[in-house]
Image 1 (cartoon, rainbow, N blue to C red):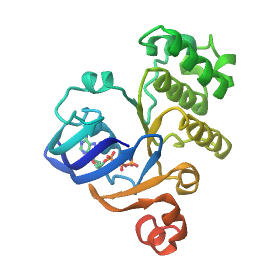
Image 2: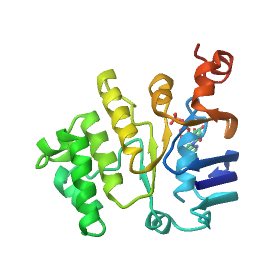
Image 3: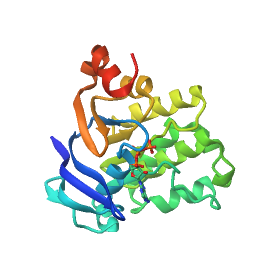
Image 4: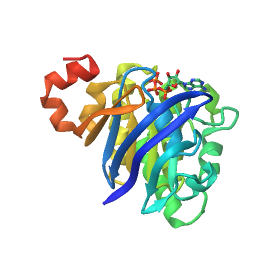
Length: 234
Ligand SMILES: Nc1ncnc2c1ncn2[C@@H]1O[C@H](COP(=O)(O)OP(=O)(O)OP(=O)(O)O)[C@@H](O)[C@H]1O
């Protein structure tokens, strides 16, 4: 089932034509990875879906509803969570406080979700009363993912969670995202092909504001020529 459909979106930032016709589809329960070099337009794509960088053309459909012209808070209310590159956590609040303000409805399902995610990230339990600003980069990333997960979201947009992390931490975060797939759907922006290709189901490659290649992750893993051509790796 298609959860999110992005069709030929175009986005300007100031006078710059950043997205020049981006289309992709996200199927429920899958991890869809957006690859592409620095400055290709990956972050702008996620921000456009969230309404943070409004589109000037094209259509964005979430669960069959056109959300392309809605304000960000309405898009968030419909169940799309965004984990930006800088994680978007409240650094002066504790881990507990950060988690509590993300839980919109304090019902049984929210508590179940909280328990499930804390089992996935046991470090957060240990750090429960610590100010989030004092956490390591990897711990902050886990907190950001956990917050997005308990926020009653059906789709998570996650921007480069591996950025700046030590390899062991990158592996942990990727494994966690893979496990989150059991419960939610993820669009992942990632430069680390080797990590993302182990957990992704489908890929899209962004270049100069356009999709230049897409398919099943397995196909890209088996296609050395495409990896060289589009990602510059063997
Ligand atoms: N506020 C802004 N003003 C002007 N140009 C911007 C602004 N934000 C982004 N851009 C430009 O838009 C283009 C796409 O940026 P974007 O952040 O979407 O790329 P990206 O693929 O996510 O790259 P990275 O991996 O480096 O984060 C870049 O050329 C960038 O310089």
